[in-house]
Amino acid sequence: MSDRRLKVFHTVARLLSFTKAAEELHMTQPAVTFQVRQLEEYFNTRLFDRTHNKVNLTPAGERVAEFAERIFDLYAEMESGVRDLTGEISGALTIGASTTIAEYMLPALLGEFKNQYPDINLRLKVSNSEGIVSMVEHNVIDLGVVESAVNNKNLIVEVCHEDQLVLVAAPDHELVKRGGKVNASDIVRYPFVSREEGSGTRDVVMQYLMEHKVSPGDMTFSLELGSPEAIKGAVEAGMGITILSRSIIGKELKLNMLAELPLDPPLVRPFSFVRQRQKFRVTVMEKLLEFAQSYFKNNA
Image 1 (spheres, rainbow, N blue to C red):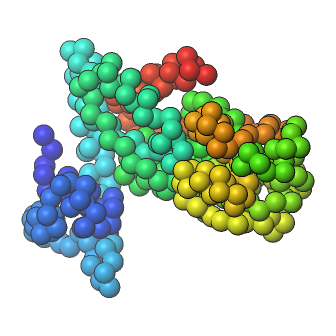
Image 2: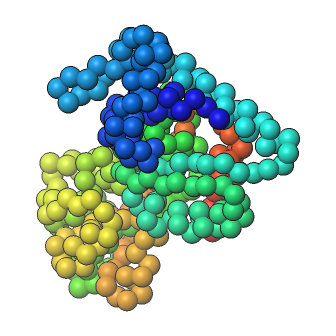
């Protein structure tokens, strides 16, 4: 429906990369460049500066990008309005989720949602919480789901679920043999396996420890790893203890590969939907948000 040249330009402007735009649009890079050049010829001005392997918008490009954003929001609003009248629920939605949520929570939720709304096309991008918030800010995704606090006045944050975190250790670990609850002063005495910088889980855990008089400098980090599966493997191998969501260690607990201990005081974090405040909320997004709230309520 929309002008192909404008859509290609809008994608390059959003990603500031011809290569990434080509990948997202399933086009070749020369084809992307050709479409942008056609638009530049139409306006008789450069829209991008391409210097030192960097792509930046020119002042004219910034102006076109502003109007393009408004145009595509209007297209989305028009399509949603017509579908509301006809009763059709279809369209596409790009969701981004932090690693823990994408690996352990969204597959079942999105599977049930797809069964109920087969004409909705869902796409999922995975990053840590910091990366997901950045994707929402830069309009790479329509909706983000993150596991840490978000402080950005341009974004709407809606809590959808509360997640309990527990201390996780190998079954033969000293703390497990001792039993009982574990506090921050217990944790600091042992090597700790942590998520990487930018991870929502890491942010929540570090904030919890600092609130209980343990600074990161007091910790002995044995490893920093980029996924929950890698962390679980390291803890199982006896390389340290960690703090993880209780919802992702069920299999390991049943097989006695890992053990859990409650934290004192308990640590609970919110899982939140994040979206742009000024972006039109299409019917597809409304349906997913409603479905997710009901899903988490019924599976609490």
